[in-house]
Amino acid sequence: MLQLVTLAHLIVWIALLALVGQFALGLLAGAKRDTNIFYKLLEVVASPFVKLMRRLTPRVVLDRHVPLATFLALGVLLVVLSIARISLCLETGVNVCV
Image 1 (cartoon, rainbow, N blue to C red):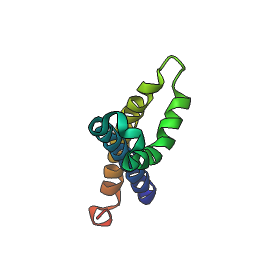
Image 2 (image 1 turned 135 degrees about the vertical axis):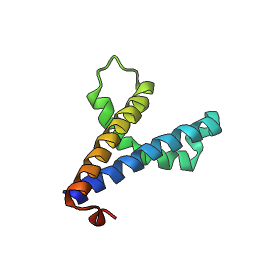
Image 3 (image 1 turned 90 degrees about the vertical axis):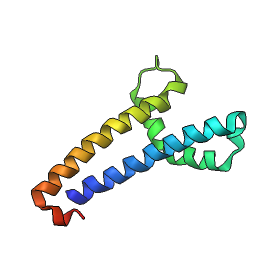
């Protein structure tokens, strides 16, 4: 169970960092971000999570706000997974979690 929670934790971290990197690179690149290869790479990494959030949110939510909703949902999920991981580590012994 600990490995499953750790794997989910890692996947959520990667998605969050991809969204943050995409946002920062979008600010730096400006209008030319669509031609930036690194922006596209980060978009590919984050797109499954953004598409899932688009399906979960009502149509009232604008498409440009979906990445922010994705970031917030992943942030909450990261906190929940961190708490679960800490709980499992304390249960099984800290030396197993290293």
